[in-house]
Image 1 (cartoon, one colour):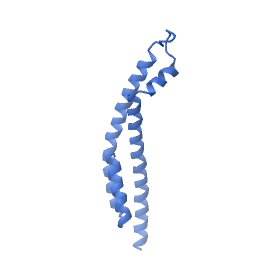
Image 2: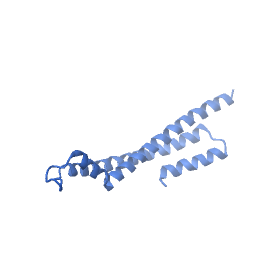
Image 3: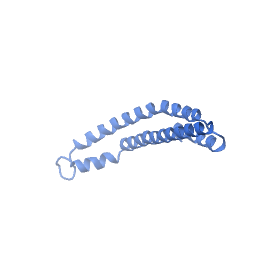
Image 4: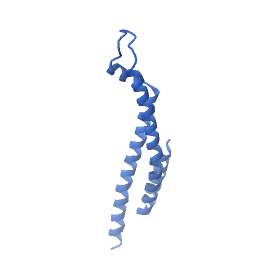
Length: 120
C-alpha cells in the first residue's frame, strides 16, 4: 500500500472514531501535499521512459512486410511494455493523490462551517 493511502486510511479511522477538527484535516492535507511532488516527478520520469519506448517502436521496420511499422501497431507494442505500465501506475498515483487532496479540502471546509455554526 502506498504511503499516501496509509496516511489517508489512518486519518479516516481517526475521523470515524473521534471528533475531527479542521486543523486535523489541514495537517493531513499538508502531509499529502508534501508527498505529491515526489509522485508527480516519478510520473514525469515514467512518461519520459515510455515516450522513448514509443519513439523506438515507431522507427522500427515491420518484420512481416519489411516496411515501416504502422503507427497503430507501434503504439500497441509500446502500450504493452513495462514502461507503459509504469507510466500508467505513476499517473494513477498522482490522480489518486489529487482526488484525496480534493476530498480533504472539501471535508476541511465542511468542518470549518460545522465548527463556526456550533460556536454561535
